[in-house]
Image 1: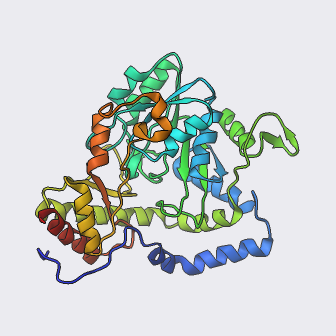
Image 2: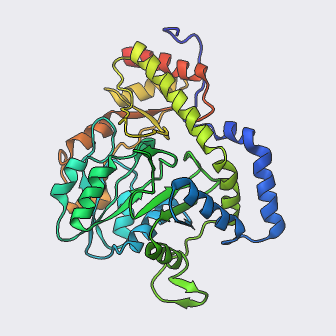
Image 3: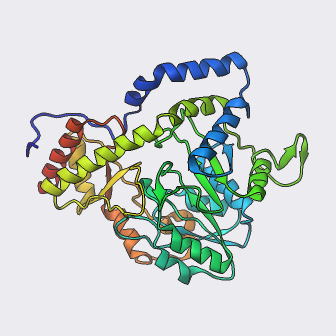
Length: 377
């Protein structure tokens, strides 16, 4: 690999147009089929996708909802979370993980993360369990499963529910089990940027519990299973038929795309370890398949490095610059700077490099050369 960039190349953080060009005819045919049927809400495409996602994840049931956030809210509610309860969540995540807890009148309690994987630290969870704790909500961040066995053991010993936030990790595995299939309910996002993304909002909750499944069906439709007969407070949260049709097309390609992401990550690893030793490459837990929703490194002077990369045409993103426990919405909970030092360090150092299935070796090499220049100054 060259040690200096010869000319400016533009490398986006994500290139959805490149993906669309490979499946355009399949997608348009699927959309046209829905338009011909004129069935747009909870039709045959949603039902078929629910079965296919359940089969893919290895669960008995799946329920399509309006977004990944709704999957979390409804999943927690279906597990009995409500006012006065506490749910333990990692602070290094998108706000929706905690916000879903708050939306139900419950209190998020913030756990520390592992430095290497960025995932929730099981060792930090047990001291947080109280008589009010109702559930654990681990996040499979950046496409790698959290260390689930210790969390599941804790949940069993304390009679807690486990709600998996699988927004970024569909297709990843942990000791031979699929993400979303290990807890009481798994919550999936189909936001367009996800490994399996629609062309708008969408989500799904999967479960092996008949009881949770029935609650999810009720909660997504105004607390009603029988039409015009509501038995509880619910939501209007239904996956659109058009989105389901698109997602069924894309699901057929998901394993191939995840494989391409892993190959790109391997290429990044080799080049960065060779030419940018100052950047810490993503840690692999060795417990299953990482699907690299993001390729996230750690680097000192992160903000300056990111600015220099932008000047060289490389788009990066910071997920997440402010930990949830320090967000204004949770100021009343009293967390101070330094409360979760590993999380706070990650917020200062983490930066995600361009990652998508169609990224070329040339693009990866340009990103690495540019990063070397940005770090060296």
